[in-house]
Image 1 (cartoon, rainbow, N blue to C red):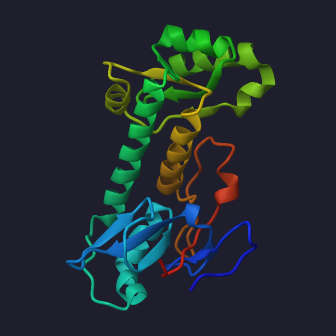
Image 2: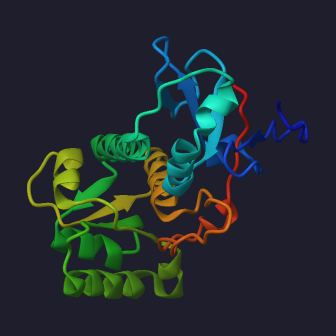
Length: 234
């Protein structure tokens, strides 16, 4: 059942693994398909009764191991052993699509020279490096960012979770290693999805009882999302 909160905040949900109560934005909803297969409902729009799990891979893996979906839904369901990886794949695809939309809106520049120029001009909302980007290139862009923003450079998000081929797909070009996100209407949509993916991968959405989350990515906004929980209600 929903946990009452203030009129402005809306209901919490309870995690079927930790039993912690958290905001739905910090959780992932799951429902049973007509054939009984458990599926993630990232947009929280699928019909039927749902159960909630803190938005971290470790908690989804633990829910599968404990058979928590069957208990939470009070029904026999089929749970793919690959569920945690499937969720990560969906979150990754969602992030890449959001980056593609930001690019179509003219909010992304790519290529070392253009990124360095935008960074030095202090025009960037986030720096995006391919996971395989060389340390030297990252360092030079960080230096350009500091020249443009000074101490405020620490406020710029650094995205390092995508492989180069993912950036190629999102930006419609080849061999993308460095990119920069410019502030605009589509930039926050991408950053919200990236943070969700980063929390899921790094355990910031919560960890099974008795375990510690691995190190968080370099994000100033993740601290407020520590731990997570959901509720076995829709």
